[in-house]
Amino acid sequence: MNPDEYTKLAEHERNNWWYVGRLSIIDTYLREFARGKGPLRILNVGCGTGGTVPLLERLGQVCNIDVSEDAIAIMKQAGYEAFQVDGVDLPYPDGSYDLVVACDVLEHIDDDASALREWRRVLRDGGGILLTVPAYQWLWSGHDVNLHHVRRHTAGSIRRLAKTARLGLIKDSYAFLSSLPIVIGVRVLHKIRRTTSGSHVEVPALVNSTFIRLLRMEAFLLGHVRLPAGSSVVALLEKSPR
Image 1 (cartoon, rainbow, N blue to C red):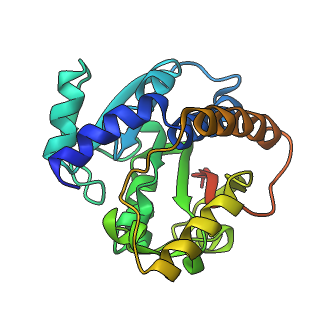
Image 2: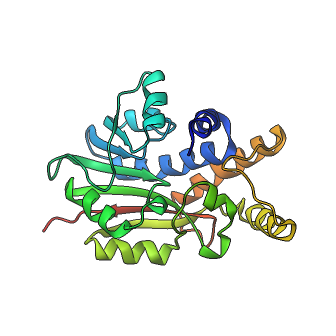
Image 3: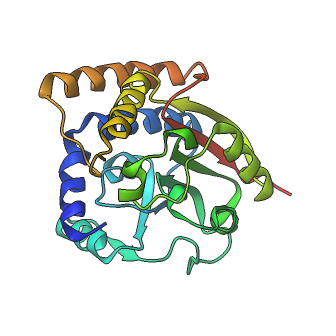
């Protein structure tokens, strides 16, 4: 993304329904992983402009990295420590972290299997990887092009990648089920009109607040059930002890 897009991202992460909803969803998964554990050593891969950092800092010590110089600059302006690091070639020793978090990162990486293997390498035995990725290649649109996505995933494709990287599955689900009909409708409309949405889309305040409430309810459900569909996939993987 260009520098202006990162500025928009920083604003959206504070109040946009999609980012606020995603935060609620990953909070549900992280609380389950962290239950009964002490402070965690966390690697935040693709930290962007820092929307997940306050949540992660409640769980332990966080190392924020991103490949983008613009993202790192915004992180530092916000008072966070962050480093410009390629998430596929990490300068950290084996077993350095208890948890790797990569929210909407894997879909940007050409060799996603290598990325997962590298994230596994820096985990201690029993450590976890929390992923979110966009779902369904049939939802591919100009929106994905604008965001420099390489692919979209399914729950099955993430499971296969995890197996390739010798990672176990703790739990996974589709997410954003409540907004999936809207996402499909917008994609169809853009195809009919031969237009495309930008990387960040403004919605009316009432729509925004409604979807935030719906996604918080969905996040609660994800603590108990696996959803059958949604515009994203969330997965918690584990480096099992040898």
